[in-house]
Image (cartoon, rainbow, N blue to C red):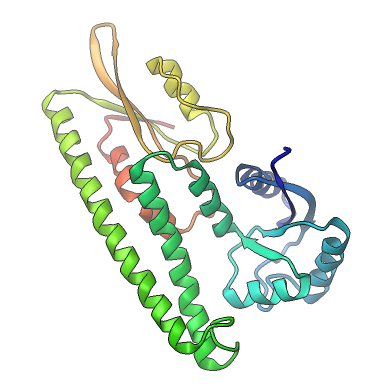
Length: 270
């Protein structure tokens, strides 16, 4: 991929895990130059052991990647420590997924949902950074003072509250559409499952639509519904957001209004 950014991947030594992580990296615009396998990537100081961290440092010197992609969730202190050794940006699994979401967002609702998920990611880390600053384990907020860290944390909370209110308005709109469909007696068939499993391809085949497919993970981030008629029967078919393993609860919650469509479906195709 000519527009890809070089990266080193640290992941588990299992084929499925590595394949998924590489697909995520590709969807986010990264080309994996080297893969580092490690059974334990949740160790306290660097996410990996010190010996493996030194090994990664040597790979960085050889490959000159722009980032290291870490296929797990890292605490701010772990991210900081590993970046200090390797002298390159560290992107953990959740940040990588958020980058994909940001690239794929195509509707107003999905953009709001993604911004909310990003703020929740930052909020979790802001708490940790504030804790480190107060405990004196790191000098300030990685360069910011204690007061600035508190202000930043409160700012994140305020912005998240604003986005939640916007999503509530979107939920009201969805409920109105749902009520209208119910009054019309139109059953809904929803297509659900793993991301990049071919849900949109099936949706296009059933509806005659031409939604974009084949662009990797999370091509669809909003529910799309179309009316079809088969043998004199009218029904609605919905293409839904796909998910992957180890997706954090706050990301799922950010897409709650979209996923609620599944609970109102007469049939869910998996």
